Amino acid sequence: MSRAKQPLRPREHPTTRRTAGRWAAFLFAPAIVVGIVVVSTFADSDQNGPAAAIPFELSSTAGQTVSLSQALAGGDALLYFSMGVGCDGCFLQIPELEDAIRARGLTLLPIMVDPAPVVAYEASRFGIELPILIDPGARVSAAYGMLGIYGHGDRPSHSFALVRQSGDIAWVRHYAEMFVPADVLLGEIDAAVGT
Image 1 (spheres, rainbow, N blue to C red):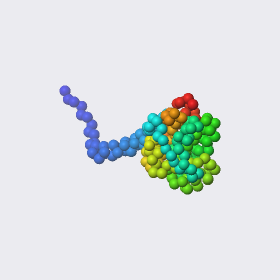
Image 2: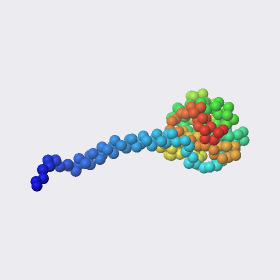
Image 3: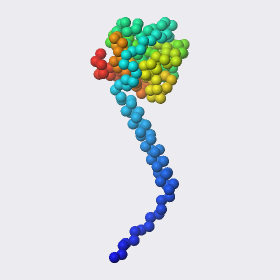
C-alpha cells in the first residue's frame, strides 16, 4: 500500500515568524491601551485617597489663607484638584460649577499647584473671581491621592473630592476629560451619595 506523496511546502524562515510576532504586538498594543483608557474614563469612583479629610490651610489667588475647616463651617465642600495653567478646560470648569454648587449649599474649593500670580492671570482671562487655592509642592494634592492620575505625576489631572461637614470624604472622581458639565458631575454625586 503506497502512501500518496504530500506536496512539498517551502520552509518558513525563522525571521518570518519573528516579524509576524512584532506586527501582532504592534497592532494589538494600541487596542489594549484604548481599552484601559475607556475603562478608566468611565470608572464610577476612584477612591484611592484617605477616607477622612486631611486638614489644610492654603493661600489663595486673592492673597488670603483659606482652611478646609473654614470651608466646612458652612456645610459640605467640593474640592476640585485640577491640572491648572495650560489647561483651559480646567479654568472653564470653575464658573461652570460655581453657581450650581452654591445652589446646592456646597462650597467649591478649586486647588492648583502653579504659582499664584500665574494662576491669577489665567483666572482673569476667564473672568473667574472665585479665589483659587495654591498648593505649593503639590503636598495637599498628594495627601488626597490626586497625583499620578492619567500620567500626571507632578500635578492633579481633573479630580474632585466631596468632603462632608463631618470631615468624611463621601465621593472621589477622576475624569479623563478636562471639562465636565455641571449637570453631569452633580448627577454623578447624586447617584453616588444622594446629596
